[in-house]
Image (cartoon, rainbow, N blue to C red):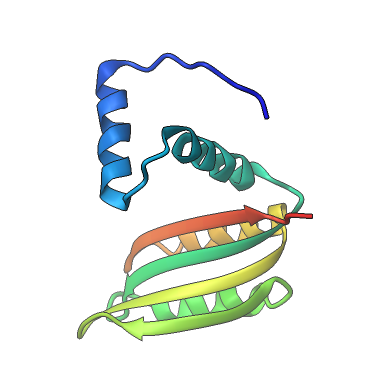
Length: 130
């Protein structure tokens, strides 16, 4: 393990402290290390396991059709999906994918281009741990 020292402005430090308190984290090093690891995994081209979370208004445009077509184009990396209804219009979908980081990026990019109706998109990449 390597020890690293960083300098943060007061505002960012307070935001880190606040974020840690919101999730119940007490170890600042672990918190910052997990954020750095997550960001590096986002850039990874090696195999990753990913969770893609999206919220969309199913009554706007052709968002449902677009999301379904995209998922069919990425059957090689998508392992499963779950779908729940948040309210009368909004749906939350979680896509579990495993594959090359570049292929996962392509999936997320395609979803991000859905446009109208897509309200939220977040991806969490976990590098394969050996």
